[in-house]
Length: 169
Image (cartoon, rainbow, N blue to C red):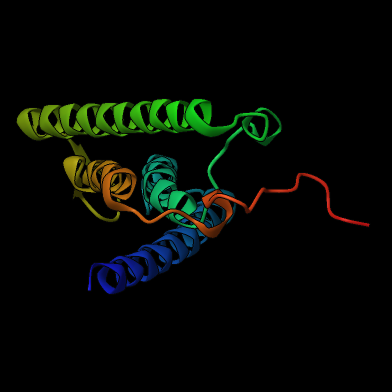
């Protein structure tokens, strides 16, 4: 049951990332058109909203990459590890990942709290409270943490399935 829920959450994350990319493209296109054609700032500071969308893509994409085994690892060195050393390395990598996820979540929460307390608002076509898009970073950090703690091993991480750096000839 947990595996089914996890897969559905990952599908929702992928859909959210696709929507964020489409929204980024639309905001940048409209911002460019309004600056160059109408010489106005109807949308406002679209670049700032695009920056938040990029942060959201990063935060949500971490969980997707980890679930699909696309995380960065030095496979050349990792293949040399055997038995106990490999388990220790896996534990160390997992601890670093958990600490990174906690740092991302904590920093995101501090940013959201600061924006909420100060009442920051993005002005333009849509007056948006600053804490609203910033909350996605906190959610992404929590999902990244959950993926580290309860996520399944990807097929390439299972024993006996080494990852090849170069394709076979």
